[in-house]
Image (cartoon, rainbow, N blue to C red; front, top):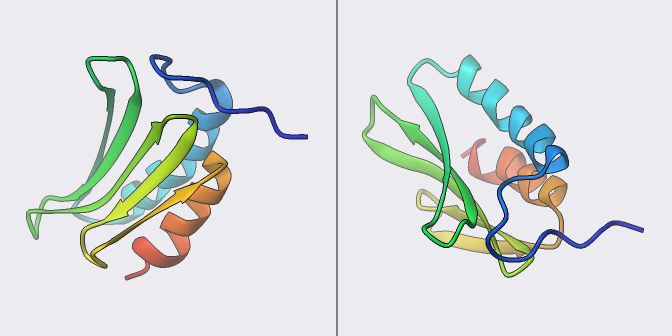
Length: 98
């Protein structure tokens, strides 16, 4: 059984970071994409993928209230997932492929 994600105020776990590495690889393969990860003032983690050539956000992913929120400004939609793996899978299949 999967563990619940950490509650508010906790940085990315090792398991979450392993999923973020999948996104980092996509950024390395894209000519103008950069990724930044940080956390809110409350300590909740987030990552953004930004297209430096087009000057737009490609993807925003964050852990909020033990759920993973994926926001795609390009597709003008968001989704909430129970696991980081599912959130990254969604980002890779829909958001980044758009």
